[in-house]
Length: 156
Length: 169
Image (cartoon, rainbow over all chains, first blue to last red; front, top):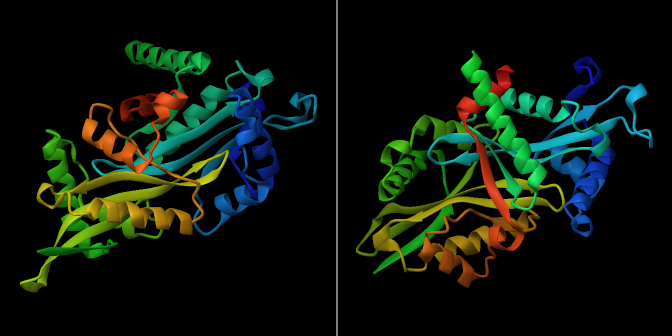
């Protein structure tokens, strides 16, 4: 997919239904679908109240790329800031999901790039996240990214 | 006999909190790993958007009741699970060795539990290094479960160098 066809933006209140849809999809993939008890109302209050408890990037594709069910929002990355008493602020990537039919197109890399820029801009010392040990594709994704980054550093 | 009290930290506690953070780091043989300053603690904890919250444990000597000093702290913040919502995350929890075993830890956990419930948090989470057997046993006795064992989670990290490379791609 050409980069100009993908739009990444900060989640807005009106995206909550799509966000919840994707959260449930990811939970289904992790075999935890019945554990999603969060509602659209809670997502709205918790993300857009006086003190946001989370932030979100969403990936949107143009109309000609919409899913079979006419969804334009095809991925999300939920993050927040944590605090290490030795080094200060960190960016914590809580959840990261791209719909199956939109994977392998560079959306994930673009999200990670955006989050890296955000972390650097907010003077975070590092980005942390959890990966389940059974999640082989995700583990491979992050391992490949690290090798790729090291290769780029050498080439520079 | 000493009595103690637990209270929310104020900006004036930042020097003492940093002192305890460094003391703990020294105990773990990494005193130079603490790059945080009093200024950072002040801005990050008491600015418009707090990045952390802190409880401090104070001890008063009954014979010199006007004297109190900080002997421990618990640093926490709120995190978010997209399945269940807000969680209370206990980042750091330290009591000076001479004051351990007096019930300060239990009192801190009690107040944190109350805070978690008052703010509609589904649970409290925290990291424990697996070789820290006394801590592991303490928390298991309190009723904690080990998510790495039970659900297979591992904590990963992109360090600053990697972030800079990824940001510039």
